[in-house]
Length: 133
Image (tube, rainbow, N blue to C red):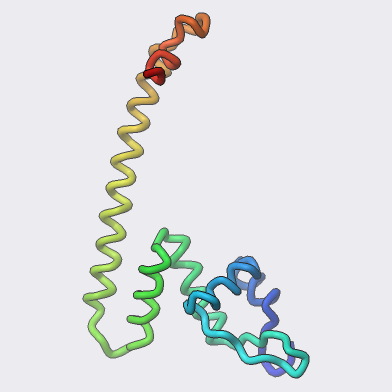
């Protein structure tokens, strides 16, 4: 697009974000609505590209939308202490660690069920038996 602005499709391609997701982020206030061209098309600038890239990277790391919003708010105040940022990241890391522990327990349980399988009939299947009430 002319004048250094990007169309929504270009912004989506550059950030690997679907157009509908970009519109959603605008609706919920994570991404500012862009100016409009004379033809009423959205005209995204470098600040939109940077902010959307930040959002995408945060989401790729598993941060919730509320956490992303808080991180964006904190990143907008460049002079504040990063203690709040650290707290958000540490809380997220603790949640990731909890999920990993849960997945390991799930894996052990499934492994045990699979290891007990004798490849007989369903009537004598240990997996079906374990899943049944």
